[in-house]
Image (cartoon, rainbow, N blue to C red; front, side, top):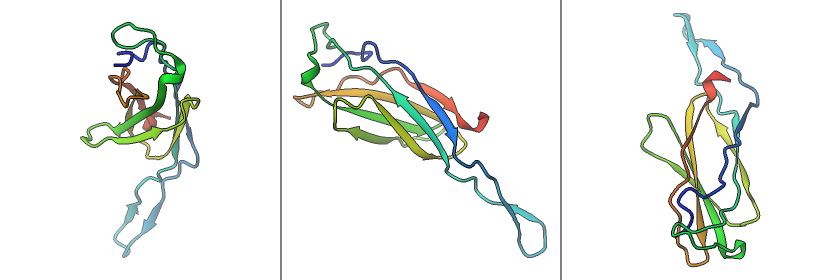
Amino acid sequence: MLSRELKALRRVMTCSPIAAVLTSCGGDGSGLIAAKPEADYEVNVSWEAPTTRENGDNLPYNEIQSYELQYWQKDSDTATSITIHDRTILDFDVAGLYPSAYYFRVAAIDNNNQKSEYSQTWYIDLSQH
């Protein structure tokens, strides 16, 4: 098993509203109707490669196969999982996010397809940016 905390995994998340625009349009003359906000936010999540397994044994860098990044909106039961197949990639831009609150976490996967427990879960509220 890989490092329980992904040892040195760190939170470096930034968000950038690409074009945060809320639009309204007139319907049948009965008033204005607010359109759904655009999915135009991006969050960069980065981490460091773990160096120890969950049992404390050394984890050589070349035994890391990939990473799994999960994210989901607050109050949602469904997470999106992204597998990063290149162990040299230690960050990922999650794009197309709505101005909402999100949770993010990362796990490492070794060459034997053993997945670590997920890192701590990070929270960011894009509606506040």
